[in-house]
Picture (cartoon, rainbow, N blue to C red):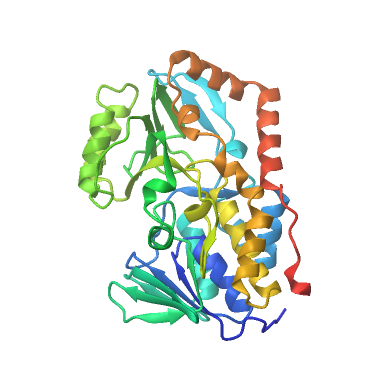
Length: 386
C-alpha cells in the first residue's frame, strides 16, 4: 500500500528501542521524512524478554510484515519453578504466563525494527534533544551534539524517563509515580533451570524469561544516579544482604556483571498524550513497569498514531486527538496493578497465596483469559483504505 498523504512531513522521534522504530516504520511507509535520535551510542543488544499476546498484537505485527521474523526469533518460553531456600519446588509458573503467545528478546526486536527502517529513515545515535521551541511552522530543536534543526512534529518514544516529556510537558516528578519497588536485570553467568526464590519483599530469579538474573525488592524511594552503574550495583547488593537460596552467589557476581540495569517499578500518567506539535508514545505516555503489556502497547500505539496522522492528512491537532481518543481506553491497563507485590510478596502468607494461584489450574486459566482480554481490547482501524 502506497499513500503519499504525509509526503514532506518531517518527524523527529526520540528513542530507538521499540516504540520509536515501530512508529518510524509506519511514518516512512506513509511518506514522512523521519529522523530517530537515540542517546545511546548504538542499538542496545540483549536485554529482557518482551512478549506479545493475542490477535490484536498479531494483526499489527502481520500488517508490518514482521510476524514471521518475530516468530523466528522467539525465545523458548520455558516454565519457571518457584523454590524454597533449599531449592525444593513450591509452584511452577508456566511459560505461557510469563512469555505470552510470542516471547522475544528486546534487543532482537529492536534490531529487527531497525533493520526494517534504517534504509528509509535517518538514525542519529549518541545524541539527545536539549530544547524544543514550537513556532507557527514547526518545532525548533537543539541537540547536545548536532546542529539545531526544525521539524514539523516531535515524538517522545523515549521511555519512562522521557526527555521529550520533560522538555515539553514538565518535570518527571509530575508524571512518574513510584510504586514501592525496584528491579534489576543482570547477566551474572550462572547456569541452571529457570527458578525463582522469594523472601518477604524480595525476589531472586535465575534463568527466567526476563534476564539471566532478575531481582525485585520492596523499598522506600532511593536516591541514586541513574547513570552510575557501579553505584547501582552497590545499592542492589546492600538490599539483598543475608538472603537465602543462591542469593549470595548472585551478589558475588553483581560487581562483574556484563549487562546490568536497575530502575524503579513506576507508573506513568499524563493528562493528555500531546502538547502542540509534540506527542508521546509508549512508556513515555502510559508505562506500568513489568506490567506485561508495555511492548504490545508500544507496537499498537505506533500503528494507531501513524494511522491517524495519515487519516488526518498530517493535521496533527486532529490526528493527536483521535490517537488519544481511540487509544486511551486500551492503554488503561497501564494505569492498573503493581507487579512489585506479585513478584516480591510482602509476607509469607502472600507468598503462599501467589504460589497457590499458579498451582490452581482454574486460577491460572482465569489469569490467562484476563490478560488476553486486555491485550485484545481495541478495535483496529484498517488505515490502508483511507
